[in-house]
Every structure is written in structure tokens, then in C-alpha cells.
Image (spheres, rainbow, N blue to C red):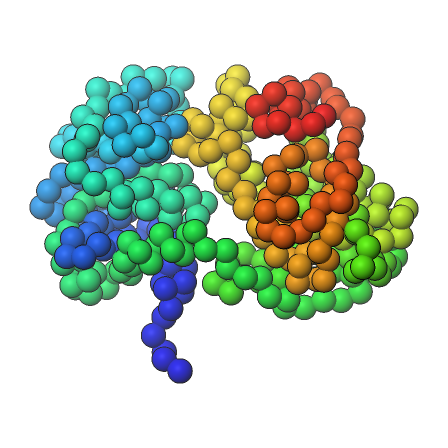
Amino acid sequence: MSLLPTPAELTARARSDLRVGLPIVIGQGETGVIVLAAETATPARLDALRALPGDTVIAITGWRAETLKARAYDGDIARIVMPRDADCAWLNALADPADDLRTPMKGPFQTLRDGAASLPRLALMLAKSAQLLPAAAIVNVDDPAEFAAQHSLTCLTADMVAADLAHHHALHPVAAARLPIEAAEAGRLHIFRPDNGGIEHYAIEIGRPDRALPVLARLHSACFTGDVLGSLKCDCGPQLRTALAEMGSLGAGVLLYLNQEGRGIGLANKMRAYSLQDQGFDTVEANHRLGFEDDERDFRIGADILTRMGFDTVRLLTNNPRKVAMMEAEGVTVAERVPLLTGTNRHNAHYLATKAAKSGHLL
């Protein structure tokens, strides 16, 4: 067996590099780009990047460009030429909307409309998958493999990145044990890990559900603030406890606890979104100002776990039609959508209204 890293392992390494502030290289034939994540860039690394021949271009998503009033000639992304007198603070302000209301005029910007945007687009997708702000400083390089070798940088091919980001990495059972919980003493916790070394996900099995019958199931995205701290800004904690209580009362069920905090953007970005909500933006608007889509979650994970546990038909506890559609698309039959309704309070009323109006939740 070869000791060389697989494409999935190289992509995982690249995510780690971006998170610690190390540049990576993405190549396409004889040309390529060196990529530095804006969020983790240091003045020294940015200066080294800018010392290379050619312009330093800042790639941001179309949503972030809309906030900054920068022209996104590439549609879903914009490529902004970094001014010669700009510094790391300028880059951070471009990527992070925290001070947008205090200093709204960050331009004018010189935005590129010529040249291919495929590599900058992949760079932003990779930053998102690392749960970083989707903004990156980019410089074109010749002979990317040689450049990466000279600087001991991780080098990926464009095809490798695109294939890995589109691929659903299979989840494998790691461990399982009996776990009596408040909702049901007959509880069992299963741990699943994707084959690319990514984050683990969990399944809480109540009783011994009959695999031949539709099982009461819930796909619950992790919410540290709601599930653990009892946040009043969302309905996640009450939904978690209500779902487990219903399964406990029934004597059977399975709750999948998917580590996709903040609709898939991670806890740090979720807190950034909360800060923007304090400025008057709703959930969706806050995500867009950060450069993210309304919802970045991948519900294929839930379908995979259910299938591996032997469940092919479910009664799905959800108010989100998208979850139903995704389960069906992945081969899991949804025999019934079971509403999951909890109370509201003055802190989450607007949040729930936004879920209904903009995300299609059936409340």
C-alpha cells in the first residue's frame, strides 16, 4: 500500500493549513494560484504573498460583494484587486462584516471581469469547508507543483478539489454503547466518522426500533448555544428535548445529532451572525453579509447514517421540507412528516418568523 496521501487526505491537509494561516496551492495544468485565507492571514504572510510577481486578488462571494457594493462579474464570486497601500487590517475588514455599519464605505474597488474565476471559486469553497470566512488573498503562480515544493506548501489540483468538495464521504461506525438518558433509559449512542477524517456525527437510538417499520426519526443539527446553554434566541434546545421525549414516550426512535453548527457555518461564524443580528439583520441577511448561503448544511450525512443503521423508511420529525426532499433524494423513504412544534418567546419570535418566511419552514 502506498504511503502517499490520497486526494481526500490532501484536501483535509489543505483545510488544516488554511485554518492555521498557511497558504496552499491549487494548480490547473501549468498554471495555478497560491491561496491565503483572509481570516487567518498575518501581516508577515500577507507581505510575503504580495512580494510575489503579479497582482494580489481578494476573492469574496457574491453575497459579500453585494454588501460591499463591489461588482461580482463572475456571478457567485467577485475578484477584487488589492490596492498597493492596503494592509492586513484592510483585508480583515473586507472579509468580516463586524464593522460594516461603522465604516460602510470600503471602496472604490477595482474588480476583475476578465480571466478565469474557477480557481478562486474553488478557494472560497475550500475556505467554507474549513468553516472560515469565505474570503481569500490569491496570487497567480506558474508551475504550481514546483512552486509548492519549493515552499513546502500543500498542492492540490483543481480537479482534485472539485471532486472532493462534491463528494459525500461515507460515514463509518466507530463505537456504540448503552446510554440511559432522561428521555429513555433504553438509550444507545452510536458514533460515526467520515472516511476523510472529518468531524464525527452521532445517533441516539431509543429502544430497539423495528427496521421493517417506519422509524420515528429526527435530523438535529448541533446547537451549542441552544442545546447546552439553553439559548432563548432559537428553538433548537426545545426541539431536541421534545423530539427525544416523543421517542421516549413511543419507546422507539432515532435522533441523529449532526455536527453542522449554525446551519453548517460553524460556531465562530454563527456568533458573528448573532452579532449582526444585534445590529438589526435577520438570520438570512446575517449569513449573506458574512458571505454564506442561507443554509450550508449537507443532509446527505443523515441519510447515510440512517441507511447504515438499517433504516430505509422514516417518520421524519421536522418542520423543514428541505430535509424531506433530501432524504427522498438519497433513497430514504419519508412515510410521514411529523411536525415538531415548540413554544416561542420574545427573543426567538423574529427568528422563527424568518425561518417560515425565508427558509420555508412549516410552523
